[in-house]
Length: 557
Image (cartoon, rainbow, N blue to C red; front, side, top):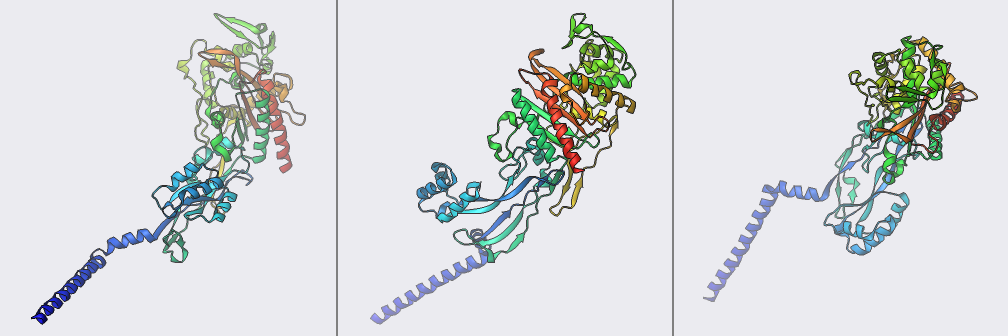
């Protein structure tokens, strides 16, 4: 009897083990066969990692292949919060090295994640100090950081990028698709501490570095222009200032600068006023510099000759309820002298022989109704009315630079017509795009210029504008070694619909040398005080920039 009970118990235990083993085998079969793909995916996610390889952003060069913007290697610190045991101590150590608040670091380390950025693109010294501490769960990876060797140089033209090297402003934004490049990928295995096992790389797709930009800007001329503009900006307590130096024959922008400016390497700490590219973003009434367009139109249409005389009414002329003034009284003078001394009265009287149709025609020919088409983001054109929108008094205002608005770049193109034998060129600031080996990917050829005025009118205008510099309102633009031509302007700013008596834009537009112009330059100073005349605040900037730039160009030839 006892042996029978024992036998049944043995069979029961044996059956239990057989059943359990069968269940385990079936379960194992289910996991390995039917759920194979599911669990393999989980394992792959835990041990296989796909990392994006950031491309190197393209370099920006000046016209002589001097570096203006380049990418350098930089470390970025990350953490694996799940393996950090003492988060308080770790946060304290990391914050001291990286200059962050301990609370901000602790908040990052408290996240239930296997990867968080602590700080991107830190200085090399800080990265080295952090690595020396050998903190568990803290490591760094090498990234690429944008660097601008000349800091503020051409900041408004070049622009900036974000933390991920995407263009935000200027040429960095406009040509981002060329500069950025394409990311690569590496698929590899990592251990439990997220350390990559380089010997277990399954796939590697290299990044494609970005293309390079070669600009028309000349670093030396840009430096000269910024130096002299900064002097005037400070000396005359100005609100802002702009300068453009251009090759009048090709349209190449050799220098473009604005004040105030900012450090491209520290763009976060710039002011709102320092960001705007005033040379292409701001439009304003030009005042007397517009008389270059008026005089060119008058001479081209042969409405008036240079030696025709006009009564400038001793500086005050009543036209109905309107009164025109000259800043200095004049009597009867020739049309050439009218432009040299910048008489508003004489200019308006001469323009009456031209008529509104021709005035409008030449404004269009000089490009004052259209954007120039320069390859920089944010360019605007002046808000100028069509001919049908002109009033009965427009021809008393427009010829002397009122009721018309322009940008500094439009003025540069306008004065280049006189410097380029009567042709208007389209400005350009990029010459070509090249690959990392220096091969040309895309060319930006010089555009075919448009004829605006005849050679005969050009020669007359050069003589007139040379007279402005030698004996007229632009004497402070005169140089010892080079003959220049140009025109001064002092424009009242409009406030609440009326002309201000204490806010002005002082400007000078000109070219040199007169016989064979090499440079065309525009200088605009916004709200200078207490001195505000263009001949006092802008003409000296033109003189110094052109003098030093021509000497530099002569030394290179």
